[in-house]
Length: 308
Ligand code: APR
Image (cartoon, rainbow, N blue to C red; front, side, top):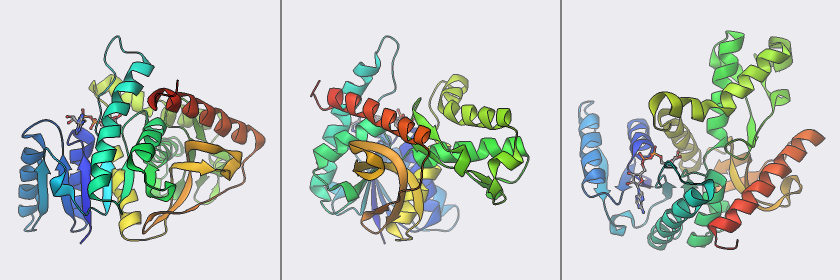
């Protein structure tokens, strides 16, 4: 049975624990700084499984001792941007949190794979990579799967087809600089351009790009069901060693002509994390968009790592 530590028992972390616990038997440890929160959620989750006649191994903790020997560490700890805070303020605050969390968790589970979820995602991957000392194969960021799911949902809605008939791919950085690849999207195996006119494709891409902000506008808090589902998808690929190709943030070292930046690309996930960074053919505009996103991530990573 795989052992999973989820740091941050808030909306995303606790929902991910629920999805993971209901899918496959795992040992799950929820960690949070708020006393009682991870313990309370762990109890509630165990009782949710009991309602289905299933045993659970879910614990909550305010320290890292119980996380020892985890196979997967998921980092969802952080704060949301508050009024008056600049983007750089948020980066510095969350970098401090992610740095401590990654260091503490990695020390107890030196062979784990680390999945970063805290935002700004690509920049927090840099922080977790530096603080954990893990090789790049064992640090991945969850974003491309979410952006791609949002685009698939928007395309299915526009084309009025079941979402399982849609394949959608989004690369780049999580946020304004995401790189949607409509030329790579298909509906029932046919190019997207045959299923939808140009303006409906643009509308679907805009819907995916603004998907996160739209939910914040409605809920007053950021999304968690879809992020949790994507965490579970990546966790399954890693822990079950499926070799599934999932778009996620990875530290590039020459792939796509980019080095030294975490950016969303197609990654073959399996036992031990990244098995392969898959290089697909991109148009020159798509390559330029990816390079622009990487430059922006590098700039903010310098702020986060105290190099700026
Ligand atoms: N150690 C452990 N937990 C921490 C720490 C820390 N140093 N700092 C904050 N936390 C916890 C908070 O106590 C809170 O319970 O992280 C949790 C974050 O949960 P929420 O505020 O509910 O935020 P959530 O919606 O889950 O988002 C978490 O994921 O998708 C991203 O943008 C999102 O960066 C955000 C993260």
